[in-house]
Length: 513
Picture (cartoon, rainbow, N blue to C red):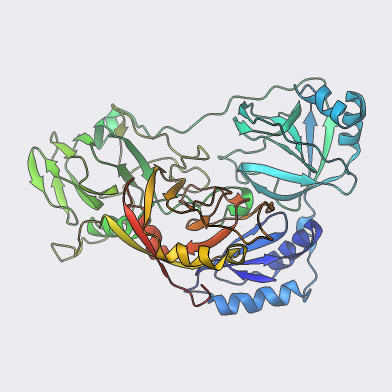
């Protein structure tokens, strides 16, 4: 079954994990131009397209042909990987006892099984492995750990997997591997991709190297400006990492894409040049040489050398002068573009900071010396001013059909559009929690578990408490809460400026809603 997923994707639902792997391989083999991502999950494949290149109606026709078995997959899923494992997990004995096995018996079963990566998610490089040889159903921990160490090999349900980095987690830990599960600097950053066949090999010991983060700091000698106060949060952002969802890597990038594009154009940068994304204002920096800058997005007082300057226009920032953004009076995120682009080492093809996955440069700190990339420049637009208005505090957000709207009662679907939702305190680049009446499920969906499905920024998930959460650019790539609708690209730009306490109304952008 092909279900709608907003205005740029469809969700293809099949019966089994084996069907997912076969369908994903067929789609990958016949992938036309305009397909951005193919994201397999437990029972679905999410097909994300650029509708300006591949219209959704054409994408649905292509998917339908592949779903009907119109093409036999090649051996693209024939990659193999061997993971050395030390079976030293803190939960090994307890998990074996729960399953009626000895520790050695559980280890032997784990080693003997022939595993396949069904899908990825949770963190970049985290693969959900399944096996026809594995019939054990392992209960998750009643209380998840706040810290699972990097390299931990674990079991949950009928899956096994290994943690590429330190994260919280509720799986049962049975061992440790030093395999390079995720290396952002490698040509192929993810070891375990969907379809990869995996065997575990027992070893006496393993040393898991410490993971590092990229700093966005340069030496003072080549600095263009130095941050004296980053405010609440300042990160480097660019166009993000599209096309990596199947590897568990979120798109990330600038939250307000129109503001990002406008800022770069105003200073003559290429469209995807890296810029700073400043949250809530309070940012200050000192120029080491003459610079041209532009600020777009959120609105607040801007000063260069104490003199008020305007947003949405090129501004000269002379050497030795301080640039200051006061607290924002409207909106949440401003884009600060510098002519030449901000220099930062790319991680998986992008300089964007992913706040959930920990990818990309660290958030900026006082004392950070920033260089410009000196990328190819374009002429500054001839117009002196760019049409703009401060972000509104009450937002109207267009939303298109989601794949699981049928899980909710007609009353709940009407309430989605009739409620004046309030942006909760939990609002960041990962997602925005909305406050309002709970959206109730149909009786046959109440209490049901949804197998993990692919997600995109703008997906409106509804947890069991019934209060919607809208995923942001750093949101998870898979999730287990039903998606009632998907915010359009224009709506996501508006949501990027929604601050806690803001009011919003959803407006239907789909005849299916």
